[in-house]
Amino acid sequence: QVHLVESGGGGVQPGGPLRLSCAVSGSVVRIGDMRWYRQGAREERELVASITPQSVTTYGVFVKGRFTISRDKAKNTVDLQMNGLKPEDTAVYYCNADLFVPPWDDYWGQGTQVTVSS
Image (cartoon, rainbow, N blue to C red; front, side, top):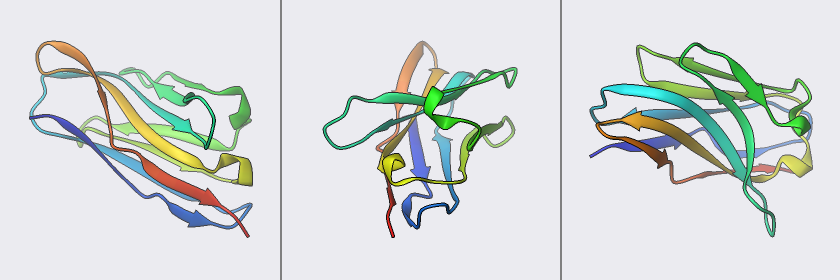
């Protein structure tokens, strides 16, 4: 059975850094795009960043150069390095990936809480 397992969430002061990691657990044939989403309280889930198998990246407008998404093809992981965190970045962060087990399907992690507060 295939899962996405997230780690690295927690509390941080405004302006501080935090690094999230997501690992593909289980056997897959191919991994497509990998993404991080977030959902704040009383808000809709929004795309934070995505990365293709060719490592082409895209970011939400609100990121403004503060976050970096990266992937390790050997380890089947995707990371999100977050710097300059703001209280409005407080949310549950979800890892998402297109995986060919087979078949191709959309997988989600369980979510990890990020709280930015002084």
